Length: 149
Length: 467
Image (cartoon, rainbow over all chains, first blue to last red; front, side, top):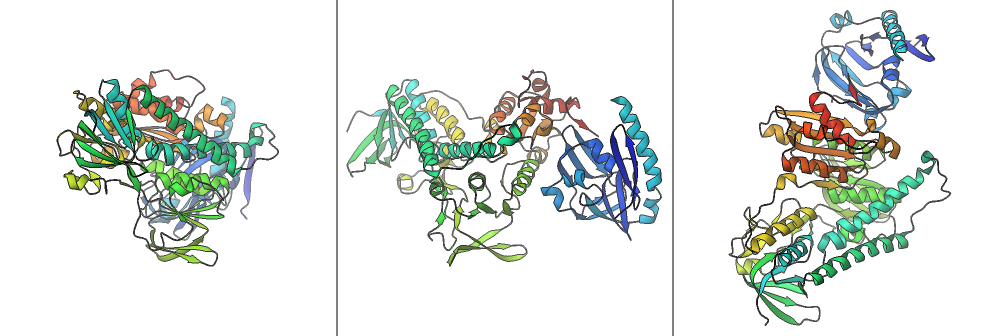
């Protein structure tokens, strides 16, 4: 079980799992050697809303950093998620087809999207945020959002 | 032998009876030969009875969801005999309506099996075996189609049925295997799944709804059906059906090897064939294209003054395609000129969610070299769809990049089969996405999803955001 950093902004509590890396956009990256599992941060899933449909690029797809690796559709937004690494999609969460709501229910666990085989994980990792850094970025964004409402 | 008619029509289905009504309206003396009841496959054993069943099963789904809508319905269950009565009385009323129209328009309805003796003469054999002949200056062949029977061993086993038997729901099989993931197979799969069957679909092609369905839509439908618990095997070629102790076993071949599943009933729905055998066509020299009657763009056959329409000429086997061909050919046989604009013939599938399309798919448009821009909108962001509790699906418009002309519209979602009419109009008149977007659509309604999709052409969608 990962541990979490937690913050509450305007009644909403957001968790950041401390066992992985993040992109600025809120895609988490959990490495296992050169293979990285990716998903949506708790903040990104809450901000996006109830997920109706998730489409992940099929295994075999080559992606460069920033290329769309998945798209999720919620009630009011379509969110294109950029790949956090250069590499090839090697596994897609089969549950995404049948119950994409897993992203909302368990963003750091059952709601994972794909596993990507990174061509140069060490280099790509340098571009990512550690949990503490993402926590700061996320909190600032959440507070900004709260002000808008 | 009576005076020659102006027009003799072989087959009283949607193509034939519409041609009869229209030709008569244009002043022709018309004889219509029909071996069974008017209305053909569509009205008697096709579109109409299946839609009666989908209407009931949709109600059943909603009744089971009553709580979501703030209602208490203590008990809801299908009542099969009443369901059959409702279905049959709907069919009977519509058949009666067509018969009355034919009478009002003074069309001579000859009941019996028609056989082409000469390009201007039909033989009619009635149920009692009495033979008569009809001569006419012009002949329209509208013999329709028959259920395709693939060469699969075991097709004649008890429990192996076609769509015709599937309409007569006497029992709900616990496990239903549907061979064929096309329109007919999928509609029945949805009907029986709602009634309580565990349904498995076997489709030979790599996706369900082969041919002409936009990939994005086919993919969404696959997901929706799987979410509801239907099992779908694609790329599955059925090898045989055999009787086993507790039902039927279907063996099929997939890339990964042979596989077999067991069921209580097997519905074979692999399409329909033009009904062109045993009605004198080859004897009289009508040119065929495979099983279909070969026609030119005016629906003329190779024989002078002999025309053909509907399922028998192949292409999309759709009642509304036959109807428009009937109207067009009625003008030809009365001295007019018109052509069918096949681009604007929609295709509709009454699954849940419904699927509908018109014009070019994205892949077809790109294959033709068109510079394409896709504009789409999900039903999850349409208020009416939310109210209905049917927010699954999307509207996808395939537009010409520069002009915004709508080349195709592809829908999956609530009432998609109704909503496609606007897309068909757009394709027919060459409307642009801007034309749709600046036509104010009433709020809160499902057609707003068409407007919002059209707004997407200018990246101006209001009620949905992409980031």
